[in-house]
Length: 507
Ligand code: FRU
Image (cartoon, rainbow, N blue to C red; front, side, top):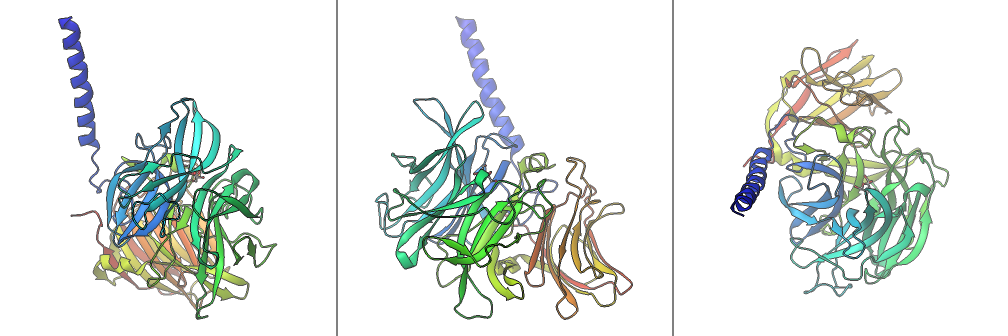
């Protein structure tokens, strides 16, 4: 008897000491190798899509697909962080956790979805005049096998700190194994909620409407169109201003699916058109794919709900990673990052309306030292550089550089191609498809390609010609020397303006 007690005491001590030790050892300090200084990363563990982006009472909420138990995909739950400026994030406890059906024993993971402010308590679930509502895909599975996906609802009456599951979940069930990623927004002209969902394997976006967030009626469907090389996921539908046409807007439907480099990778595409409260109609019903980002590491992007009218911006955050190699990124104890928040708008061009993406201007708050030499060294910076395309065959900038590693952002004048080359960027061997070069056609404006580049330890985001084109990619420089230099074949190496950016995690 005594023996058993002693044994169990040792066991208990072993378990608790272990868990204490491992929390201490795992405690991230946000200064590990490759840890971004100003892009959001969870303290530890696996993260994928941004979820439930919503602004409420002075706080931007960032929920995200999260595995509370490890560094690879699984046990999907909603991680949670808040920010006052979309830059400095405070990590909060997991908001919505995977749960077990008490009757069947099946597990339900919390897949991607939306959060919104139920302004007039249309759901009747708010204790005061309004509250936060989350609508997510309830992914039912058994022994790792997906059985069913439907949409469910949870609500919070304390600014997102604690959540209750709606007692009559699911709120939308079409008895399908793949049916997911609800994005819900308020459609002012018809005073109703609209939900965009995907039927991934049919390349369809299906729309629904509701007055109370609890009962949903089907509206129109969109797709298949353009790139159907990979299943469609994470739809979003939003109205954007047109640059230079005061007061004019058009609607954009974005989805995550195929990639400009074909079915090996995933990426995002978008359609521009009109939404009348029932159907989204693209301007060009035969359009070929328009890709949102030309890098490998921008996926599952969605825009914020409830940004105050006086701000007026449409702000998107995307997942910096690619399903092809995402589970093998050489980072620990976290895996994956979020992109910089981007402001979206439209521009009319000869070929139709095109998306313009620019980094939020708040980022200038992180600027410290400014450097204008052509050779410098830093891993976290914002760089502005104009490439003169008239006197060079190829011109650009090399970042994350050491004697034998570099990532090149350059422009080939002969065929008017902007590229990001990470083939020799350092640690590329963790996956056979990681070493790559991204290329996108881009015309100079007044003989120049204007680059606005953000580098952050292992992330590179390039905004070209005032946001006409973006390229977002990881690169993992092994040597960690982080040198920067410009080059030109045939002309003069360009100069640049560089601001070192401070970490958002340092106290
Ligand atoms: C997109 C996605 C979503 C799904 C989630 C699961 O990256 O596959 O369709 O809801 O991730 O984690």
